[in-house]
Image (cartoon, rainbow, N blue to C red; front, top):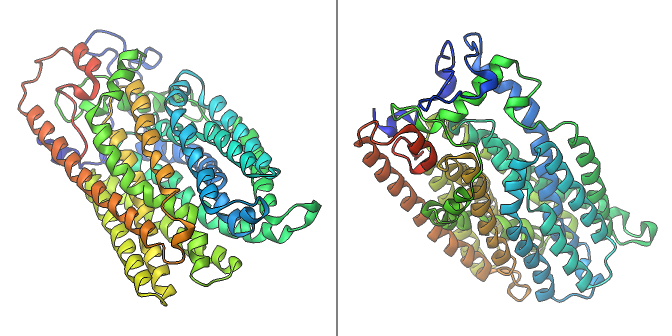
Length: 505
């Protein structure tokens, strides 16, 4: 059976084997706690639903608050932040840029700690830290104070997105992951909409307690983050092996299928490595697919951060009032959230990633071409708004597809942990670049910013084609290799470089 065909099947439709093997091919007991567990009565759809209801809502809320706290500086700006702190346009851009320096630097160590520590402790703890920093941003008095606060916000928020993206791979198989990634990532879309509504309401507090409205945006959203973090200590589950809401056979089924998912299409079942070795981290840093995938990531994330940080300002510069600009961001983000989940569902059902990522990135390109054309013509703010609308509706479905695709093709728990953090960490340097694309001197057309976004997108599209071509070439080569050429122990050690492993296209 070819890997292309077999990868399109959906696990929910597959019958559950009567019993799990007690040992793998090396003679080592597989998941000793569950060895030989009877799973004949396990209903896969019921188990997945239980996991969805217990895991995804809290993850989505965490990421909503993370994205809200990261991007609310754009809302604060149009409510008077730069005027109060006597900041120039380049100084404002620097406060956006420095966030990504520390954010990128701390992602890999944070992901490794997530695996070594308990997610129910690590994720809420970093959330308390960034909520505190966000609250203190509301009392800064000058540019230097805001710059330092944004540096520490990057340190404290660094672990959340790569941590949650990796956490999902510890619970869901490759053909189920994008739908769940999209459900929690769509919270970023809702955060964009909610940010506009919340900022519009909070700005009405201007003068309360002697504070400007923009200060209250930081203070109240920071306090909300800390409150939710305290709740998260009691509502986040650690690993499938210890999940109390699953029965023992259900835990056995979840753990077993995760261990063998990468080799199930090869005809030789090999368990993925779960133990830590520094060599897995080194392999992640030298893996070709992460660096080619990085260009795909930049092609999506440059537009993502460009729009999230500057969308209110762009709309205001089109001639709308601040309050109208805040509200006009809402329908864009709500539509994008719906599309993200819908595209992910189809992608999981088909077992393919690249066609959906490519199509969504093409939509981003159409949106920015409209923006550039309409801005150059002038006098048509509604057309510019439509272009931004189309671009954002391509960005939000493309992003979870891009992250899921790379995570699908990294095998071995610790290599996946490090590899996802490298991919997301270096990828988020695009935020530092995008922070400087939309210069105050270029308003209201912002043709330079739109053009730079389009340039990164074009390179990203080439990277998508390159990844798919290489994955397909390697899969076909492995299909021709005889089974048993390498021992199961060797294949387990090699992870996604094993002859039994098949890449998702």
